[in-house]
Image (tube, rainbow, N blue to C red):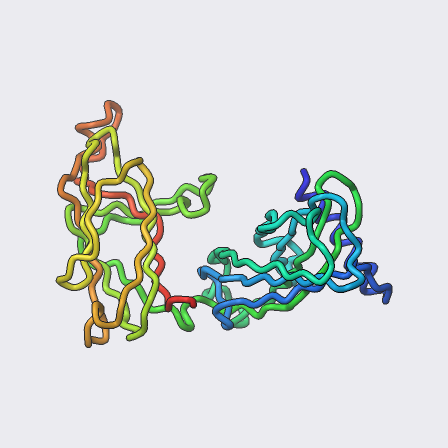
Length: 293
C-alpha cells in the first residue's frame, strides 16, 4: 500500500516538474554512479550513492527513506524498486556533509528478444529521492535518468546447459523471483560457458532436499579444478565466487561442473510421487558476468 501511495505522490511530483515548477531539494544534492555503465537485463547493478548537503541545508527533522524506482517508460509501470534507509538517518544530517555508501540491485530478465515488436532495447527511467513514510507529502526528487536497457546476451558470456541436466521447470507464482524456474542436476551436471578472459563473478542459487538427505554434499569444479565443496546448512543456498582468467584456462569455452555425492528418486522419498528421475540439486539461477569494481 505504501509503495502504491508513494507511486501516486511521485507521479504528482513529476507532473509538477514537467509544468516548470522547481521542487525544493532542501539543500541536498545526489551524485549517483552506476556500474557497469552498460546496463542490461539479468544484471547485478552496483549503485554508488553520494548525498551532499549545502550550507543552506534545511534540516529534515525526522528520518526520511530513500526511494529508488526503475520505471518502464513504454508501459508506464515500475519494473523494480530498492527503497531503503541510508547508512546515516536523514534526521541527523547537517549542513556541508557528505554521506556515501553503495548498494547492489538485480535487473531481472524482462526483455523478449524473440518478440517481433522488440527493437533491440527498452528505456527505463530511474528516479531516486527522499520521502517521509509517515506523512502523505510529495517526495523530494533528487535524481532522474533515462537508462537504455539492452538484452544480457549482448555482452554476457553464453551459458549452455550441457550433459546431466533435467528439463527446466517453472512456478510463475513463486514469491522468490529467483525461484520461478529451475533445473535439477543429476549426480554430475555440466555447463559450458563462453570464456570472457576477464575476472568474473559467479553466483549460484539453488536448493537441496533435506528430507532425502541432511548431509548431501555439493562439489563445484571449473574445468578440472576444484572451486568449492560444501554441505548446505539450509534447504536453499546461495554461493558467490570470483573466477580468475587463469582458472578458466586458455580455451574459448570452459566447463562448470556441479556434482553431488548423493542422488535421490522422488518416488522413493515422497509417498504420492511417481517421479523416477535421479535428482541431485535444484539449481534456480546461475549468474556469470564480468566482475564489477
